[in-house]
Figure 1 (cartoon, one colour):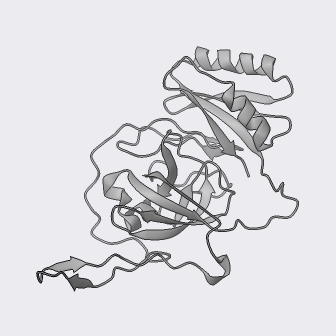
Figure 2 (cartoon, helix red, strand yellow):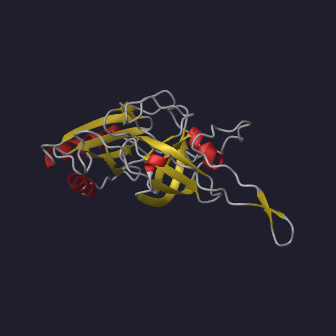
Figure 3 (tube, helix red, strand yellow):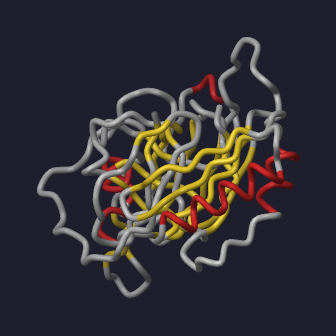
Length: 261
């Protein structure tokens, strides 16, 4: 089972619900960031700071750190995107992620809605140019405008930890090849979070009538209720058609297109 997760801008509210297939998340309330840790996160996959240089007037200026090194077998990035990043740690630590592994907040991992599971990505904080290489092991963030949810360790390594959110560049490398995998991926749509269970049930019933061959379920999350629609033919085109047809009346609920593999 996977976890419904919010992007972190502040207080992490309640535990995430694990569910297989698609990861689920609800909105996290903002809280002031915790004080900086006295020790640094693991340096594995993280860039090193460059020495300070002198400016024209003789004052010290820290040079921009170099990009985080990547394993030689990854080659060059195959895609790139810029957007907002958040992070997640407790209470999600120790729970299963969308790839079936137990989430370790001290490992260099991240959640993304659409990149294939196991994809390695380099995340660069565009505010300070700190970067780190992480592995996609989960789905999220379920907050529009955000593109990636970093583990606690990755957030500390890039300076996202204290800020809560930050503008980043995400460079994805070629995904690992899997036997018998669908080249286009398997997709579903997740809608939420609804404040009232009755609204989620109503949407579920509507989706079951409209898409009779799809698998539709309703389930509770930490701060609301969700609906997941898995088309009979789970390609991206069909899932996108479903997502585009959904217009929840609850302003807090929205459809999310998710890759499940």
